[in-house]
Image (cartoon, rainbow, N blue to C red; front, side):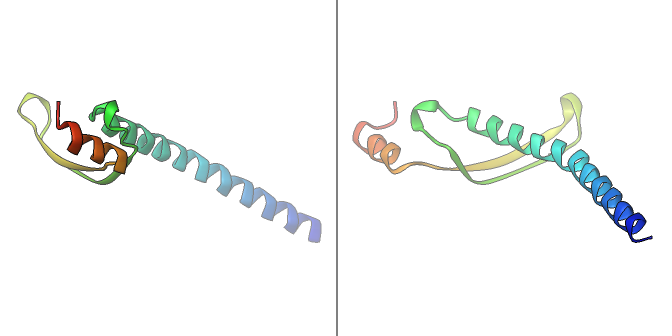
Length: 89
């Protein structure tokens, strides 16, 4: 009897773990894609690796759709110093 209860608990834990992976994996993959895409928008020479804030809204779809957004990047101190010294090229 006790063995059956243990087996059921393991089966439930296994199913919940699998369900969690099935749900969480695409969400995490999408967030990683979104993060890398947003970093792709800024020049590599700035050495930005952190996004401080990002907000994007879309309404409508297709050629007449509207989209607006703001992305705030955290610049490393070295990039800030170089920009002040050389300016924006």
